[in-house]
Each structure stands twice: as structure tokens, then as C-alpha cells.
Image (cartoon, rainbow, N blue to C red):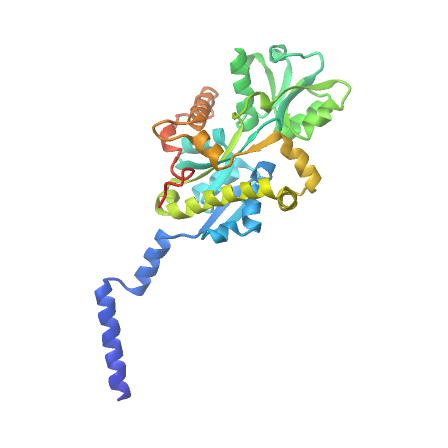
Amino acid sequence: MRKFGMIVFVILLLAMTGCSGQTSTEVQKEGAKNNKSSISIGVATWVGYGPLYIAQEKGYFKKNGINVDLMKMESNTDRRTALSANRIQGFASTVDTHVVTAASNVPVVQVVALDESHGGDGIVAKKEIKSLQDLKGKRVAVQTDGGASFFWFLYLLKQEGIDFKEIDAQNMTAGDAGAAFVANKVDAAVTWEPWLTKAKDTNFGSVLIKSDASPGVITSTIAMRQDFTKENPKAVKALVKSWFEAIEFYKTNPEEALKIMGKAMGQSPDELEESLQGVRFYDEEGNKKYFGTKDHPGPLHELSKLGADFWRQQKLIDNEPNIDEIIDYSFVHMDVK
């Protein structure tokens, strides 16, 4: 009787499998493909990315059905390499950086705007230098192999009708540039805090211009692998929604938010609060305006195109990517079902 019962059970199991047309393993694989809940995001130690740690600490990612691993990667090159190898599915960086990634044949799409530098970056110069025009022929420390500082500097020069070749550029990272200026080794530097403040504290330097004079130019977004967004739209929507919720928490619970973000940034709440004076976050409404729609693109489209034009002129990229293909407007508008 026991054998007979086992035979009947096996027959019923096979019948059920046959009706479904798939094995249980196939069903599981199909489900995992359509509902990938784990995402790895590459991030640098930049205060503008702080709300991502709020979303992690307050459980917004989990509440929205995803597990997010925020992987510290200070170099854009490292993040780009990791994305290409699919070790991460997206990374946070400036818009112009994502343009370079797309031009490097690593298909990416921007899905949400995070923050913009609104005074956190600047150009420091000797006190006798009163304008950008006065920088002609001067030794200016700036990272000339790409990055937000260089992009912003090129943007400012273009606005003033100055050819970059008229500048005696010294290639340095933003931090090294600030240090070189404070040490009185260059005439000017494109840098960020705390070097802006340190330059003012010298007896020879001042802040020539800050990024709040050109709002929206130094803007960070998260760009994802295109194949991941197509296969896992709900997961990307959850990521974007979690960012919006983290921004709202920051607005309504600033003290706790500063503690969470400060811990992640290695700063005290007071230090972080001061650093954030030069940063503006993009909430849900801000994202909708910044992205616009496919039919009526917002400033993000214009900035992406500007980045492509600049980097090609500087021969940092050989071809300009299709701007319409590196922006997905659906996630910030929550159009994904």
C-alpha cells in the first residue's frame, strides 16, 4: 500500500508539472529574472549622496522590496569598470561622467537626480585676480583628464568666451589643487570645500567664483545599466522611490538625518550641516522638473548634451552618445507599473 501511495503521488506531481509547462526550477529562474531585488550601487564619499544612507538606515529600501548594497568607490574609473563587469548595477556621479561612460560603450541610463553643487565647488585665486578674464596666462590647478571640476571650469570659460588654451593649466585633482593653492604654488585652483574656506583664510587668496553662480551645472544622478532597467523596472522604481522618501525624512527630521549621514561621511552632524550649505538635493518634484518628459525634456537633457559637446572638443571621447538613450524619464514620474 505504501508503494502504491508513492506511485500515485509521483504521477500527480508529474501531471502538475506537465500542466504548468515548466519545472519548478524554471519557474524560480523566471521569477528571479523578472523580480531582481538586489542592487549594488557604486558611490563616492560625497555629502550629496548622504540620503542614500538614510534610505538604508531607515529601511526604505527593504520596505519598497529591494536590498541595496552601497559600495564605496572613490574613482569614477573604478565605478565604470565595475559597472561594465556587472559587479554593480549602477553608480552615482555627475551628469558629464555618465556621458563619458556611455561614450565608452558601457550602455547606461540616468534614472534619478540626487543633488547639485550650490556653492560647494569654486575657483580660488590670488587677490589681484578679479575676474575669469584675469586667469589668462595664469597657472590654474584643475583636473584636466575629466571630472566635474574640469567640466564646470570649461563651462565657465565658454560663458566668458575664453579659450582653454589661454590658461596655463596644471593637472591636479580638486583636493590637490586646493592644497597647492593654499601652499602658494599656483595662481588659482578649481576645488571644493574645505579648500574654499582655507583659501580665504590665507593672506593672499580669495574665492573668485562659486558653483551657486551656475546652478544645475554640477549635478549628480544615478545611472544604471540599461539591460538592468529593462529587465527589472520595478526594482529601479523602488530605488527612486526610496530616494524620494529619504529626502522627505531629511526635511522633517534634520537632526537624526544629519547623524545618519554624518556617520557615513565620517563627519560630525555640525560639520556635515556646514558642508551641506553648498548642496541642494533633488526631491520628487525637483526631479520631475529637472528630467522633464521625453516629449518636453528638462535641463538634464541640455546638460547631458553640453557634456558630450565639451568632452568631444577636449578629445576625451571619440563619439557623442545619443542623449535620448541615456535618460529614462519614466522612473521619476513613477510611470512604471
